[in-house]
Length: 372
Image (cartoon, rainbow, N blue to C red; front, side):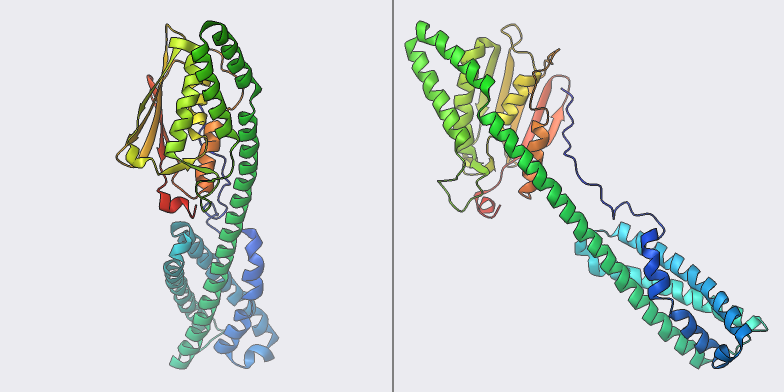
C-alpha cells in the first residue's frame, strides 16, 4: 500500500537561501552602508577629497569597487553561516562566527585598499598608524552594523516562516477536524453495521444485543469531544486505555461483519494505560488497514496492536493489497502525523515490507498531556 505519509510542509525560505545576497536585500547594502565610502575616502585622503573633483570621482568609483567586493564577500559569509547554523537556539554562536568571518573580509579589504591607494599616483597616500587605526574603527562599526542587520533579517525570516507553517498546520487541522466529523457520522459504516445487526437479530439475539452495545460504545466515543475525565488535558487526546476499549468494540463490529476474514491481536502492557495519544488514532489505523487490504476467509487480515518498552505503540497488519481500493480517507495517515505535529510531539514512524505494514506511535506521558 504505497501511501505518501509525509505531510505537506512549507519549504524553508531560509534553509534554501542562495549563496549570494538575495536581490531584495541589496537596498540595505548599498543604501544603509553607502555612507562608509565617503567617510573612508575622507579618512584616506583628507580635505583634498572634497576640493579636487577629479580626485572625488576617481576615489569614489575606486572605493565603491572595493566596497562592492566587501559586501559581496560579507554577504557570502553571512549566508553560509546562516545555512550552517540555522536554528534559533544557535543565534549567539551564529552571530559570533558571522562577525569573525565578516571581520576577516574587512581586514583583507582594508589591506587591499591601502596598497592600491599607496601605489596609484593620483591617490597617493602615506600609510600611518593613525590611518590604520581610523580605518579599523570604521571597519569595526561597519561589521557590527552589517551583522546586526543581517541577523535581524534572518530572525525576521524565521519568524515569518514559523507563522506560515503554523497557519498551514492550522488549516490542515481544520480540514482534519472536518474529516474526523465525516468519519464519526460515516453513513457507509452505519449502513454496514445495521445490515450486520439485521442479520444477527434473526440468527442470534444474544450476539445482536452485544453488537448493539458495541455499536453504541463506538458512536458514543466517536462523538465525545470533551475530556470529562481530565479537564486540564487537550481535548484531542485520549488515554491508551480509552483507545483500547474503543478499539475492542470497533474490532467486534468488524469481526461480526467479516467473520473469519479479519482478526485482531492485542498485546498491550497496561503499564502504559495512562499514557495519551490523539483520539481515534486506532480507528484511523484500523480503517487504513481494512481500506487497502483484501479481507476474506481464504486470506484473513490480521491486525496486531502491541506496546514496546520504548514507550511506543505498534499497530501492524499483514499486507495483501486490494486490486481496487475503497474510496475515501486517502490522507488519513498524513493527517495523523499532522496531529502529532500540532501537539508538538514526535511524529509516528512508518515501516513496510512485502509482508507487513507497521506504524509506531509515540505515547505521550500523562504529565506532558496536561500541557499539550
